[in-house]
Image (tube, rainbow, N blue to C red; front, side, top):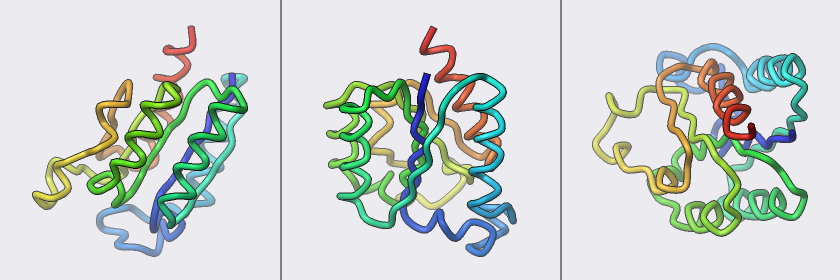
Length: 144
């Protein structure tokens, strides 16, 4: 099994950006923890982060052509604005888990809308980087 972990805008600034909302763990720490989890489960993982919507769409498409088994995706602010990401996920039909570090349901009104949610098998919010590890478990269950 091979999964992509795709992160959208500003997630490269984890640990720097608003630590009260997003924690003090860095993006490198996030990747290391997920890699350790995947290694322990015998799952290959590839990480990708971009601040550009089209690049994220391209990565989703690439997953289809490379036979990726699942995606863990934190689209960042594109969660609330990107029909393009929704369309890409619907097109490729790769199981996807939507992950958010902060608890969106307790944040601003505009953050209550997720355009990608309907293309996802699960949504995890408010668990910090642990949400990504939960996403691994969900995708492993989906792959069985």
